[in-house]
Image (cartoon, rainbow, N blue to C red; front, side, top):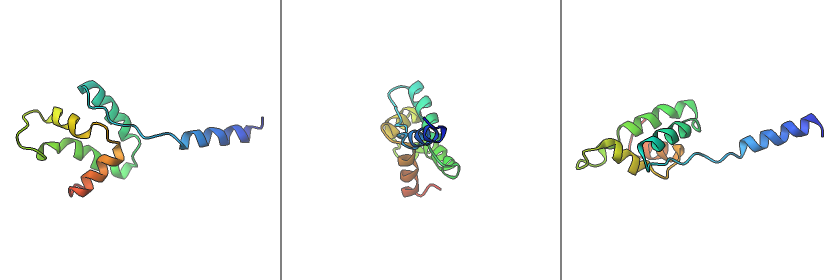
Length: 92
């Protein structure tokens, strides 16, 4: 097989990678998956993503554990979903 065909196949496989889904079931999996999901974003969106994760406490006033609320809020979302939600809430 020609090297150019192998290179093209590898490039196509890399482009078809599905985005990481955030798992909020435990604090450890949340930390791991949010870090992996963050890598799916363009550099310009990473600050918005980080800010959204830190400002989840403003969504509900009754919860005393902002880390648990972040895990519940972002569970099942991709990094792009988090950024889109942040933009909808006015976070830039």
